[in-house]
Image (cartoon, rainbow, N blue to C red; front, side, top):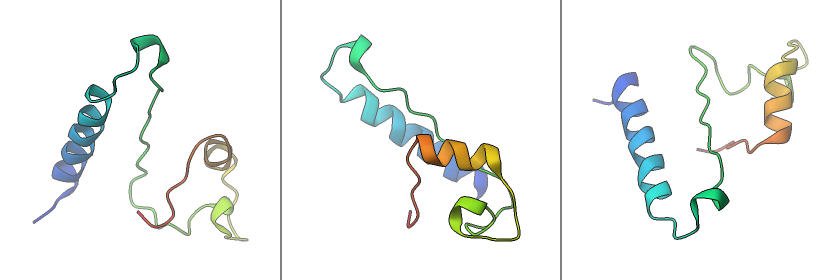
Length: 71
């Protein structure tokens, strides 16, 4: 069974594996930050089209970064 702790461990290990396989110089590596919100559905942000919520900080992060809608 996949619980939250195992999910985060798998995500961290996957990110580490991707970064170690990069053949670019250290100074050219991208900064990757995974943000997982707790107890929130995918529709609980105004950037996802919810007209009843105001989430300016998450909206700014979504606009400046990459948002995976079907992950």
